[in-house]
Length: 401
Image: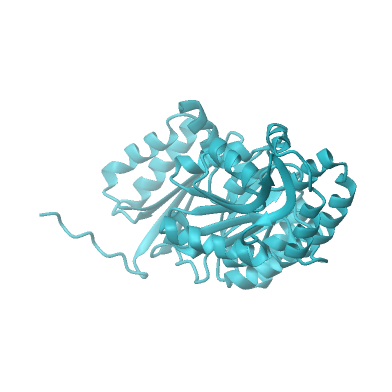
């Protein structure tokens, strides 16, 4: 039978030992090996290395021979050329306050003024930054801050305003066990997963690209009803050979980092869905190529090998995208709270609002202003940093594959 671990009370004396200086192999081993004879309990350890500079802290119970412990720790520090501090106190670390959040900052570049403004806003909202770690250095700098004491929803709203002023992107997610659960990622396709708009590429074959582009732009800004604008654009495609759709697919270019994001998250068991106002002939080929689990899109009517200028069946519009997200989440048996939606246009807004994490990706201003989270760098794999995955982990996984 194992013996119960003694309870540490807030009034019990403790000692914090910290070593700082140039990082070297063997420091941690030597410190704890030399502390072993004193019979102390290790309550907490934190170690950080930044560009070769080490910070190693150990919170310990107080031994009978406190003077001997201090002398031993100082000897360890001297042998490695490290500065040593020994601080006396009581109890464990102060409990983190309620309202725990993960705040991820993306910058290209990330400037000191932006970090200062974000830190001040966190403080003004009653929050405390408990820990800061770097998620990535390229193609963007990504920093994660663990924050407690501030309401996550209020923090998201306030930091979004600061981020816009400072030219950086910020995402706030409430901390909790669900953050580690399997997720469903639902993506728009045109100008999100791929570069450009498919309907405009098809329109190039009909000689009406400029006219279609004008209608598309108005719809994405929210100036036109999507369904109405779709029917108007499709009508202009009447007579185009259906074979041109294959040529359009062959010419598609994915957003930078798209394959990396999908490959990385699928390794972790994530599911993917495409929900598009585009067309099934293209979308099903993309889904097959990238290993996408689900998709919903519009179907163009084809008669005698040519487009008729009409759509078959129900139109996947703004409301339809949100409905598809919920349906795919149910089919995948993943709670809607654990869905991630990514889009750029006004017809994506309901989907972004319905998801647990809705991300406006290089979005139109009307979308960026209404979405809870925006990413305004051109790299789709920046999304993985918002989910707690570092660039180093991605590279290690790729190397091991």
